[in-house]
Image (cartoon, rainbow, N blue to C red):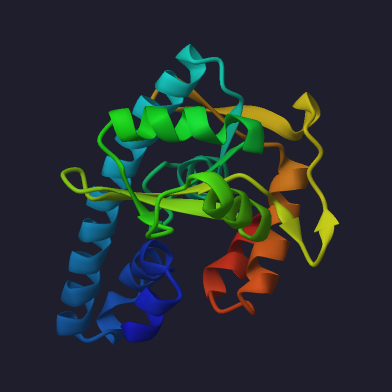
Length: 208
């Protein structure tokens, strides 16, 4: 159970093990079912927030994309709540970062990372040496990683051009995400910088 949770394959493991329930201890399946239900409830909150935030960014004419998470679940797992996710990963251009932060804070999000005010020299240093800003909504219990750079090992793989994006329908709402080629490339490099510590990343790439 700890390994399933650790590698974030709760939905896939539960669906698979249900088909062999006569061989699986009932208490284990009960625990796994409970974890799966909690995961789906969390995903529903992230679906609602993804839609709410995307509408606000669209109204402000800010180009964005939601990577992994809800769009990936819809595209690869045939349902927005079928892939466990910890947070919402969102990419905006670095030139739009101040306006995007203003919108998210107006929506109730608090900046948790970095733990200092992004002004002056500190802001310039942080934006130069980091890739994202961490935010959290204390009432909705949703975490956002706001990425402003997708650059790994000193190489820029993502040009600021419209052909890297696609839309995916989630509950009849169009969300912008990366197109398939860039999305799978992002997954590979994201997994690489985290030393491939999640089995789910391999499964995502396999499905792509």
